[in-house]
Image (cartoon, rainbow, N blue to C red; front, top):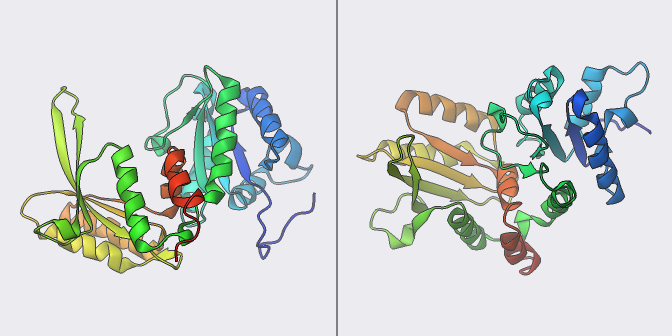
Length: 291
């Protein structure tokens, strides 16, 4: 297979499959199923050539993939190679490269800390159905085209997603007496002692026609949170990718002011929408382009 140069705009793989050697048999079964559906997969049995640098081949393949599928098992979470692949992917910033990470649970194991915030597909009880869902998710991502929305429909999408995620009492800026951010919402959960805790989240929604979300978006939210008499959590949701300068500035601001801000950028937003096909249908398939 001909290798592509860095200048090529066409990606060589759809999926990079990360797995432990002990899980090669189930990995091969998954690859076969994906191939049957026309999905291109980087699988070392097929792709590595004699004399190839394994580390470089893995690094190049992750960079040239749309999806990083990680098979989770006791072997993989303890595998040096799998951990190295994850570290390499995160060090290059998955979001900035628009790589969607899809964890797949194939055996009981402790979920790695890097993946703790990710929803995973479960293949432990029904392999066929689990792989079918994996293929479906890979197929859904191209349908999520934020450029088909305008700022109003994007904010509506965010509100609907927040409801799906368990947020309650969502108020928009125009409906509140203290405008400052786009949305205000409550989220309830139980602490380790079984006591219900309700958190107030202040949410800034930024829709960009360009791919990059600038520093001003973060600064605006930090400034508003720092002036509040009571502590609230901040959330920035954007269809763009936060610049490295904005991410660095946010880390510094959080350390200095002890403000907590969660950023959901375009890549992670797509990942969350994968779990809610009804929202994808409503905002992307049925509406068409909204200009």
